[in-house]
View 1 (cartoon, rainbow, N blue to C red):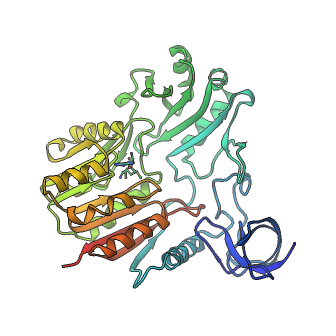
View 2 (cartoon, helix red, strand yellow; view 1 turned 180 degrees about the vertical axis):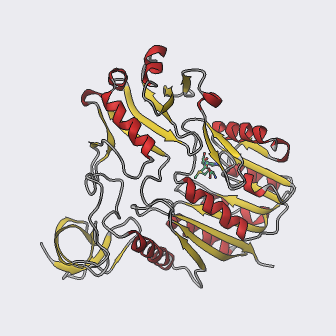
View 3 (cartoon, rainbow, N blue to C red; view 1 turned 90 degrees about the vertical axis):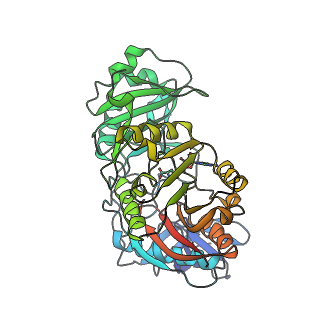
Length: 430
Ligand SMILES: C[S@@+](CC[C@H](N)C(=O)[O-])C[C@H]1O[C@@H](n2cnc3c(N)ncnc32)[C@H](O)[C@@H]1O
């Protein structure tokens, strides 16, 4: 079947939605709303079809030539063919549609959709698959499990791309790659250097690892064998034990071990911190249930008395404590290695509550916390989410339990992709 269809809108995930002549929905990648396209149906999934574009009959004025040679083959980007300002408009529309789709009742108080200062080159880390036999480093191809070899990623910081290119020339890496499945290249704006961490089944020789740092932009290397902590840095005298360094909006420094979570687009991370500050919340006690390195907690400590942050990654908590000590603020923060649920349970058990609770869970959201949260959050909840559908799901539970959604902001943390960060401010009803 090769129907001609008009694209109605984009959905969360990035595909366009259109109607087939038989009335069924068709999902089509790499299109723009209002375009008229001839598509080839590739899959009939009962309730809907999947299709690919064969011909664009009426092109959107927002269509542009994608810069990346791997675009549409690589599974990473969905929006490179769309002018950047329009990407933000489409993400805003997707936000409203996702709320509606989940039967949100009442207003959606979208305050602002904030673009990324950098359209490309914003990623401070890349995770690549390694296929040693062919010296392949790359990402998974769209809709497959095979690895696409890439020589650069336009979303990544240029230093990461320099190291990636140099690895293809390195005899030392050629040997190590045989025993490796994945690598991470991570950089930070303060040092302009890259840390490499790779997963391996055997322990490499120290000399081999140190020789890799002949690559100019590479600060140090770590290797990680299953079930252990990453081993390194190589060389052992790398500054701050090989940690990356980031500066927050108060010029406080975060020192971060390899593999520990850092927001991907640091410029946008700073804008989120500024926005939370701008809301001028009245708090004195704060609990951050997904604190990581203390990213969103540190900028709050100039006001208030009590700050607790918890996270299940022990190395993130170590980094938070290390950074707090370096800034001389360790007496003011209490960072603990424990789960969000344990922290809530403990608070309920001891009758403790907080003016402000921060949530910043992984993609799955934090539905399991919603039952205890209303007893522990006295005034506000700020929920930072990288997955809008789970945000809306959890927000609905908060609304049923005595909170109102006061503000929502969309931060374009991930230009060229369908992903974005949603930040919501919830307030307890008086
Ligand atoms: C999106 S990251 C955010 C970290 C931090 N807020 C930041 O901005 O860097 C999510 C964090 O949640 C942590 N995490 C995952 N499951 C958790 C749980 N059940 N309880 C507490 N933290 C958890 C992860 O280790 C990770 O650090």
